[in-house]
Length: 180
Image (cartoon, rainbow, N blue to C red; front, side, top):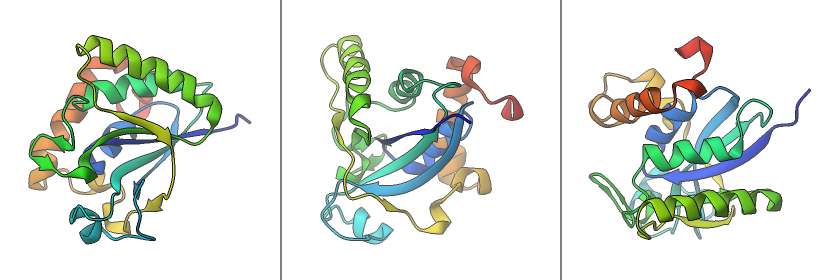
């Protein structure tokens, strides 16, 4: 049995990142949550206030024999805009910042390498933070698998669906066979 690895990403609204990574082959589990803040066990309303320091994040457990950390990060830099500080589209606030949060120290070099490549590709404008994960809290149950359960909800239909389609077109080779 292969050992899973874990990476936590902040790329704006966690509904968007979750909807994409649930389609990636080798991803075994995704969980929307909050990280990098000061408040213990925050709720959605507290995080949205912008006063807790938390980012909306997606915790990803993946099988590195099927999909590499590098591939997951390449997807990350395509499905969100890493050049906008504390913003993704109409979602504005520190909770929507871009970040890569690693749990295993040996992941840092790969994360830094891919981040540097993305920064060069974007003319030095990438604002994605890179740090060890701290203070992770799962989001409320109603946020989990949100797009899969509510694809016709307004935000999902107009924002999330576009990111999912961009992933499908750009990374067809990484699609799970059961979602193609």
